[in-house]
Structures are given as C-alpha cells and as structure tokens.
Length: 198
Image 1 (cartoon, rainbow, N blue to C red):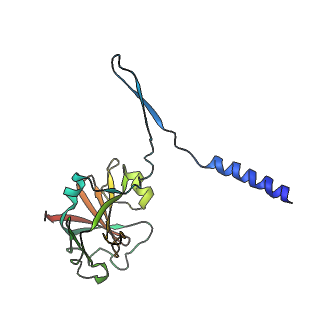
Image 2 (image 1 turned 30 degrees about the vertical axis):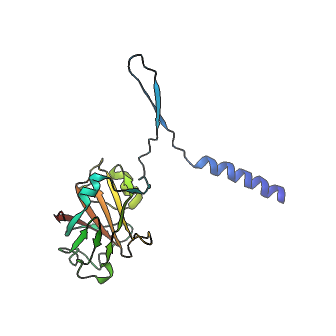
Image 3 (image 1 turned 135 degrees about the vertical axis):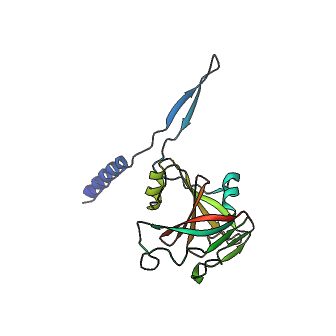
C-alpha cells in the first residue's frame, strides 16, 4: 500500500509540475558598430498586471493630487452587480473627494457615511500596473468603458501612515494614462473629474 501511494505521489508531482506554464524571457541583442554586443533579457509577460507596490511617480502624483468630483456612473465590476443600491450611481454623482499630498478626505461623499474618512499624511502607492486593457480585465474583472487596448492603468492605494493599512472604506482608484481617474466603490465604477489642483 505504501508503495502505491508513493508511486501516485511521484506521478502527481510530475503531472502537476508540467502544468505550470513558465514564461520564457525574451533576449534582445543590442549593439552598434564595432562595440561589443550586449544581451539584454526582459520578461515579456503582459497577460497580467504587475503587483509591485511602488511610490507614485512624479507624473502620476501631479495628476492624482487635487479636488475631484464624481461625474459619471460607468457600470459595475463583473464579479458583483450593485445595481439594486445605485442603478445609475445617482447617490454618488456630484460628490467630492480631496486628494492632497498631506490629506485624503472622502467627507464629500454626502449620502454614505460609511465611505467618509479623513486621513492626514496618507501613504499613496501604486499597488499594481496594467500595461493593457486585457491584463487589467484579467486582474480586476472590471470593464471600463472607452478603455483602449494599450492604455496603462495604475491601481492607487491609500494607506494610514501609522498602521500602513489601507483606508477603512471601500474606495479604490485607477489612473488611466495619467489622463483619467476612475473611482471604484464596492463594485460600482465612476469617472471622476478634477475640479481643482489644490
């Protein structure tokens, strides 16, 4: 009996190790003239978003900071439809969110006290970067209207500096090409527009 179990475990290991596809790095050869040729290896995997947490780059920071107004209901994440509560987003439209380097405030979301928070000296981080529409959809199961095939989407997290934990409200942000800001509340997505730089 022990021999049979051992053989089954070995076969399972062999079969399972063959199932995990590996990403083969692409090798580019660069060089010019008579200088030595140099090989640069890059990983060509844009099927999913990178999940590396990084500080906001200056371009994203400049775009992200300001006073934002919820302008348009875009729909729902495919994982859950919140249409019973906000079929057209009417209770969020017109509300404001303040995002500054030293202050995050969602107190301007008037109709939902559970989404209202204020945080001094928040930590803003890029929690994921998606280099195209497909990788964004695979990772988040959200279909953002008018998202182009090669748009870069950065997920932005807001954290408490003392606990390093995310804000205790269900609000998330997606920056598209540093030209568009999407608000995700629970499973409902909204387009928000900057109304002031400060």
